Image 1 (tube, rainbow, N blue to C red):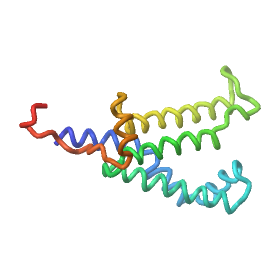
Image 2: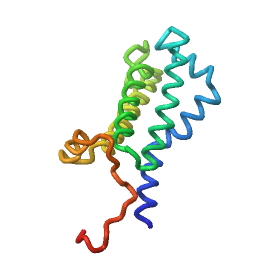
Image 3: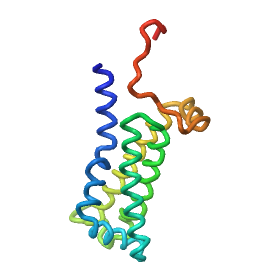
Image 4: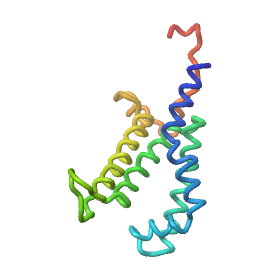
Length: 158
């Protein structure tokens, strides 16, 4: 039972940024989210579609990871989402005051960029595991679950 709780806890930590926090923020601050999206995509209709799509990705993929249903594919999608959002909204290279020492808004954006990239790495670990066999397994059957809450049978020798 403890093993199952730890597996669930680790998954909760991984998706906690998205479900519930970022998804809820998109609901509670929808206009602000669209305004932020409009900075990368000037078309307001497309900005709204991106926010709605992001909400769907955050909720559906996070739920799939928590339930262990097609969780590898869901983690792969969330990894891509983290990378895309880093590239679209964490553009530290465009800030005028990016510097490594002293006060710098650009450095703050740089850390946010790196956090998104690191989170993508965590999702890719869930997608592929820690070895080449996991990569082959995902390529062979991307919709397969990792069965995160299954305990081995006491008689199978593990």
